[in-house]
Image (cartoon, rainbow, N blue to C red; front, side):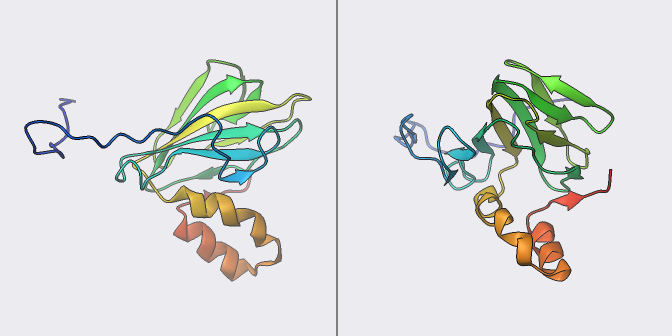
Length: 163
């Protein structure tokens, strides 16, 4: 495969001031810091659709989503602290600080915190997708009909499989 740089996006000759700084004390997008929280580090909006980067804090025994795949986005996991169980489509792996898993489009995967301690990881989606709405509304599906649930997951490129 012949890899090359992508097509130029910026066409100017002198650069511009356009960086976005996010201080460490910015409240999480969902949840409570130190518990179960998702921090919106770089959203699709701020990266112009290039990627989405999120920090996920999970309390002890937080569990996680069932096995699923995405058709249009890849998902990568980087463990910052604790133990996160990652499913790579074939097996569950106890991932620790510094471990990384990349799942291309179509790849089966899941993650969970089954340990007695909190865990912290980065999630990277490429290309960017508006995952914030997914994170903010997925917990509200308990009373949804099967049709509403299917529409929600289809809209958010999340296809769950029985395991």
